[in-house]
Length: 246
Length: 290
Image (cartoon, rainbow over all chains, first blue to last red; front, side, top):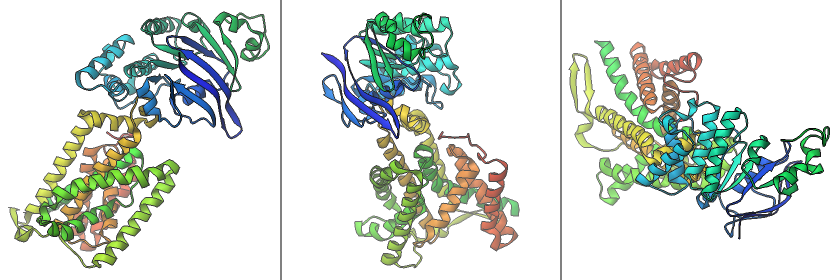
């Protein structure tokens, strides 16, 4: 049974097409990597799944329930967690409160259970020691981790990661991929948009390439990366078959 | 001892301004709505206390026990319907809609209750005061209103900083989109903020009716003072609003001392100076709600 299903999803903003008949399914427990050039519609696809953006056409369903007309906050409560490419912490709340809010609102927990859930999300992302810091004072790595912690505290079944490794140093990327591998082991399904292809390959079992709002390749990561079409759009067609992507 | 009197009277009236202003500040902080009908809501609360409470066999002054929750409910419903619809369009629409509400309310009140001044009857207590120094008298009513203001602002501050609901309000005020993706229904949160705003302004309206006379058009002037208190104190800080209200009150009392015609002028001058020198206000951060 597919956990997430997109059928012919289309969306345009004026003349800009961000999704043009996007269809794919995600099985429970799968990790799907998403690549594509800038402006391919990757983050918009997350917006369509999480409910930030309403599609012009097409159908979306999650855990066999249609997402048509379902608010973003309800989708979160159904189990769709999301991180933003540019972290959006609640700057005037401290780190713990950020996670606690997600635990109470997203996972519908109260009292001690919500405190435990928030704390464990911070622990898993290595933020437990910063729990009392105002979120606005965090540096980039910690902001990215807080995005992840907040998404985790909503107890997601599906986690949408938007360039969570972007802008980080190699050791930092390693730490983050370790965290994500643990989440996979816990059975959380993941869709991960990433330009750091190395990080993707070490975790995902399936890769999807978007360009101009359409899916141009979908399947085994190495096969997708080897496909000429992907190399053409991803590398601008200049150095096809010369530069290794990884 | 004139200075003592100016300070004391300024602080007393400043408490009222802060009580009046905190709901305005909250709605602006959370949903970026400037409610131009805020002052008129206070006046409506005053009329309800004077004309409807006796019909319910409630003493006018105790009517706040009914009026305040009723206004909370009204705030929630109005936010989830009319105001949310205008927010969904754009900020200018929201401004126009609240302005329209203000016009409608004033004219309805004029049509129903005429332009005669009204006040909330509390018997002889209204004129009771004690002597602080040779030229300084402190009215019990004004002192009570100041105490109410401090309690309301303190409670609101605690509510926002310590409770789960308060935390969600702060989060939505920080980033509505991210709050939604954490599972928070921001429209409901907006409703709660409006409920608090309406409840506090109802309390302010009844307090005003106890302190002095009001008429259908009293809302506008008080709205201006509320704006000034919020801006002087700094948007986003509730205690700042109290300090802003008090600073405004003192400036007005000083103006009145110089020349009775200068009372409002001196308040406006202080407001202008703060805007020019420290636009974020005395306690203001650059954005958002405490």
